[in-house]
Image (cartoon, rainbow, N blue to C red; front, side, top):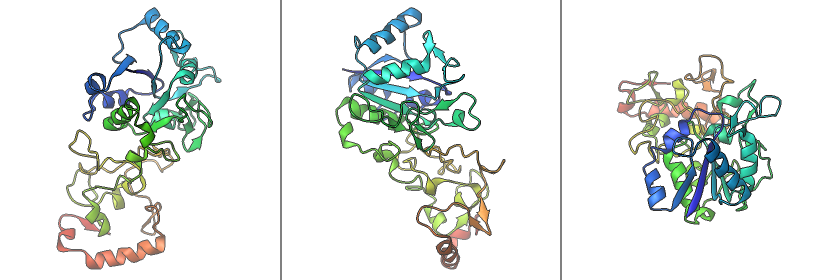
Length: 320
């Protein structure tokens, strides 16, 4: 039996809603097939009031083992580092998190808010929000750079706004079946099995990307979304086009640009107002190019792509 405790800080519950839609495996599979016991979850837990406080204190004391501590949402430190803006079970939530992280075998941060601070941590950050072990790309966060759970691992980060449900459930299975050692974490503590490739991998518009055949409208079946609509697929680490959402689709397959929600910089509020879905360019060249692509090479590639574009590339789409 693997005891799982799920707590919620400053966030919108989007990752809970995503998690409850997991398919491979489902939440029911986690319980019936993989022996995960949900000690408590904000949407599933039955304990309230004094009963919940007793459960939490039993976890802190070690009377009830915590194998996996999952945290969703930011760690709210306001006002003035007290955490009083986010009280839970008669204490600031940050105090529960501090105590429970010390006794948990594994700590898992789910969603952008828990991993990097997400939207609540954007400047001026009035809630003094942090991720568990990062604030944007700066390592440290609430638990500190050197934090390690009882298993010896740092916080396992599963970013996304929300995180893909199967990313969450499959990592929980890996822990419950003692296979987490087979999964390598990257420098941002993300499991490489989901975050080593770019979102562009598996995108059905890759030929349009190669030939610089663009679309300027959302929802179109043809055309690359990178050149005009600000798609961040070539610069974002995720498996959204390899592990489809609801086993059906992804943003780019539905004609919507990737918004880069698995990267610490999300939601990119440093862009000019009203330009989130507009590619930033300088003299026709995107300000941000895919990793490894130089501006001079990009200009040459543009000329070659235009000259070699097949007939279908000009059908109902535009070239740049």
